[in-house]
Image (tube, rainbow, N blue to C red):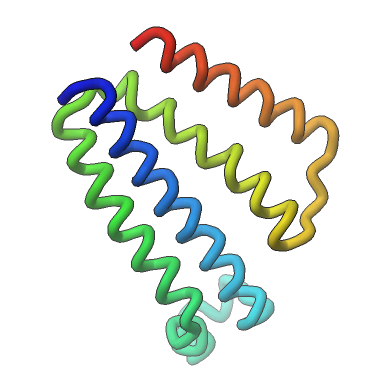
Length: 124
């Protein structure tokens, strides 16, 4: 697999994973509190009926299938660190979509992750 093709597939997988995570968060905001003790109760069915949860699971499933293509063709030591882009995107979207607090220390972490991904791409 060519590096650009691998990067494109990883990015698609990451974007689907981020979309899935954001959808799951929105779904759980609608459902409300969920504890481990509820795991074998009807609350699980309430969660599985929530449209954002369904969308999130679907996004994760497609992301996983694309990731399997990447794993079959690219070096894991190259592809896996690129998943860190997802951490950056989640922090940014969480700030704007869910009004979450992104502290200075978190922001510095995002910068460091971004630098790491940049260095990884330069090594390709």
